[in-house]
Image (cartoon, rainbow, N blue to C red):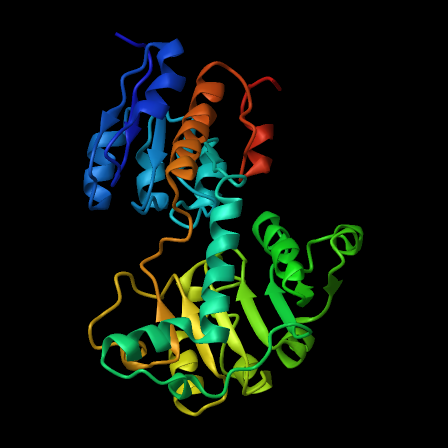
Length: 330
C-alpha cells in the first residue's frame, strides 16, 4: 500500500491509464471520487496528500480542512476552480497544464471563425431544412486583408496567430503582460483593448478567467466594435458579459459569435443565443482530441508525482508558495 493518498475530486473520464503510468513509480492507486459539494470534498479529501481536480470547486473552506495536502493539480490550463490565495496561505501548490491542447484550441477557434465568416453552419442548416440558395448567407465578405484581434497573447493565441496569418489576416493583440519582443517575433502588433475593439474585424478571446477578466468584454466594448465583426470565445464564458453580448447581437452592433464556452454550462434551453442564426455554439469542446486528453492527464499526474517525490513541478500557478514549502528544483 502506498504511503501517499491521491484523490481525484471529480471526473468525466473513462480511463486513468495515463495517470497510473506516471504514478506507479510511487506505488499509488488513485482514489476516484465524484464530489458534488464542499462537505463531500472535505469528507473525501481531508487526509489526502494530493488532489487531481477537474471541475469541482475547491474554495477556502475546503482548503482549510486539508490536513496534509501538498498539491492540487488541475486537469486543465485554467485554475479558477481553486481558491489559489487560500492554497498559497496553506502552503499548498496549485499546479496546472498550460502547454497542452495548443493546436486543438487554436484550430477550434479558427474553425469557429471560418464558419462564422463563410457562414458554413448557416448554409448547412438551410440546405438540411430544404433551402438550396447561397443567398441565405448574404453578405459574406472576403477574409484576406482583414484584422483579427486577440484578447490575450499566451501560448494558444500565439499558435492561432501563426495559422491566421496563413489565411492573409493581419493580427493584433491586447495583453499587458506580454513583452513587445514576443509580439514582434510573431509579427503581431500589441494594442490597447479599446484599439483592438475598434480596429478588429474579428475578435478571439484567450485570457484566463479571474477577478480582472470576468466581464471584461461588455457593453462598452461591443459599442466600440464594427457592425461586421464576429467574436469568438474558446476561453471561459464569463469573460464575455453574456447579457451585453445578447443585446449587441439583437441590436445588430456586431455580426455574430462563435462560442465554445458560456456563462452557464450547459446552456439553458431558454437562452436567446440558441435562436440566433448568426451564433454558433459548441459544448466546451475546443480542448479535446484523443492525444490532448492523454497529454493532459499525464502532465497533471506528473505535477503530483514531482511534489510527492520532493520536487517542484514544472507548472506552478502560485509561485509565491515556493517560500513556504521545502522542495527541490528538478
